[in-house]
Length: 293
Image (tube, rainbow, N blue to C red):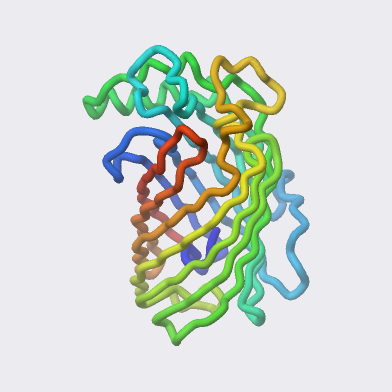
């Protein structure tokens, strides 16, 4: 929901798919997808009671289905990989709102996610199916995954345009916070777009856009259920000890965006520092395709 991914339309559909295959690895954050719909009628959704929209802003309303999966490096082994990340998967229904202030060149996004972490999120079935289809090793360690627990998470983010040069460059500051049963953290960073950049704070004519972006972020971690297990179900066979979770991590995202009238294409790459003492830095990539209507 950052500004460099804005479609500048009140109605659009987008598919976001991540996989560590793009970085030639198969560990940690291994795969995720997000099916995202934005439309004015979603303002009346019973899930849409998010209040964070200051006066003078223009709001977009959206609903998405999000799935994320994590594995240790030796995912093909049936035994617990002590010292490595536990298997974990989560699936969520997310209601979100993007409130844009065209005068102050800022935007506030808020979202509420409701779902499940554990075997009910079918992480095993998804990864095993993809690996059989691609001829890779079959993952056998999912029997040791984080057990079923509820996901209820609220996220609030703020982004502010710091500087721009015509339609060729833009610099923004960003901060966010998550609170709930899946993730508890705060983050801050900046993002830069260079090229024929999009114009999230104006009424764009939906012309041709082509630009590169970078986004370094630092994150202060309070709780991560994909490492530490669910807040309520403490019966997971293996989790990362609270004393070994890294409380400060860094992430660097970069990519290429192409927008042609109502169509949106993006290729993205991400790198993250190790998230627990015995872990390693990891990376993944993604492809996002969307269209406005």
